[in-house]
Length: 168
Image 1 (cartoon, rainbow, N blue to C red):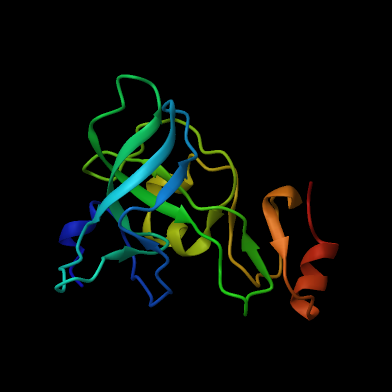
Image 2 (cartoon, helix red, strand yellow):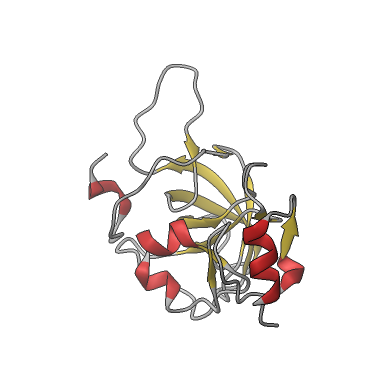
């Protein structure tokens, strides 16, 4: 996949599961004033007849604001998805879908992000990570995010080690 359709993302996008189809409503976790984003298309995805294009963590999507400030609604904005509930094989995964509104160059329109950012998205969008409080990859050995935004599925040795080093 060429980088032409993803704005100014850097790095290599690895194969991850796609879970945000066209028509999905995700939370907007920046301070632009938008509350919900409605995905209308995925950048860089060419379609197949009668198949909905889907986005994953780190993809740039085109979205409209369903709830939020009046000047943001009824307009199409590029957005980057950065948080999605993970598969059951991970020991830690996020509770909700979330994204932020970005410019066409990939720079955030807001100045802060609420909640953690997935490590897969942090590698692709370095401009977004600077505004985030923390980034997290499921199964990592050190977690520095609030436990309220995570859900534990299975406890293994990595999860126990990360619980012991968790900062609140």
